[in-house]
Image (cartoon, rainbow, N blue to C red; front, top):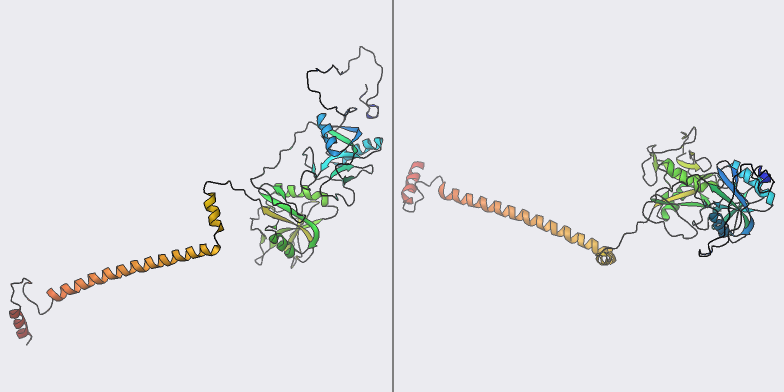
Length: 399
């Protein structure tokens, strides 16, 4: 059976039996083994670059197609650059049918990700796509990616790769807010992110809308965080190019993040930031990731950022804590007031005692002086002394 050239792959050819070839063995299955579900046959993988691809000429829904690829030690194909895109497009044209690819948002809260967890900013969406929050993607005969319900049935495109699957960025403990009013939060490390694309607003209005959600306009602290954002924003680049971020110039002329994070990383576009008057707010181009300062009154879409919600494990005194939490705030204020009054009372009491002992001691000293150190007193304080003599003598001396 031929392997090359590609257009002849799978065809049979007679050959001298003494020629050296690879070969395929077959044996009957052990009847004692549990019978596995039948796998849709593949007519061989074709190599392109470092990976191998196969078009499955059998219609299935997205989940069935992904399972079938998994059974062949493959995944629904991820398309990471335009060269692979062009090659695969030529393959599906031979079949004349659209094919499922590995991109879906059905199990990732509306965020499109490749099923093999590959990361790439390359995309080839058709105009107006992706237009569904929870859907699966297929490669159409016009060469563009489109979305539809994952229950639709198409041919599928499987991919085998020896490349190591990239490790996910470390996620810190906590969870994101529950989706509400169509807003979905995306986790990354210790924060969650919301991308607003339903209406364009000025920078101050965008900042206020984030604050109303308990968040702030996004701060970008390092290249990893920026690359994470661009990965999820790249599918929107054809429709939404600029997004407000949380960097702004304060009245002292310093660049600051709205959440007060330290400005340790910047990604200014060439020639930025400019010194033009009133360009105090910063937007980001999602196609390149570059920043520029611009007029705050211009309307843009925006990105919010909020710390993850930390779930505290219940402890034995949780009932006491819960009871204390149920007490009204005024009770806490009252207890603080009682403590302050008590402290003042103790200070006054202590001061009073000090004054009292000082006064008593002073009084005793005065009494002793008046009894024994008087100018007209003479002789010994002994009870046997005749005070009258001394008194008369003093009077005579004074005269």
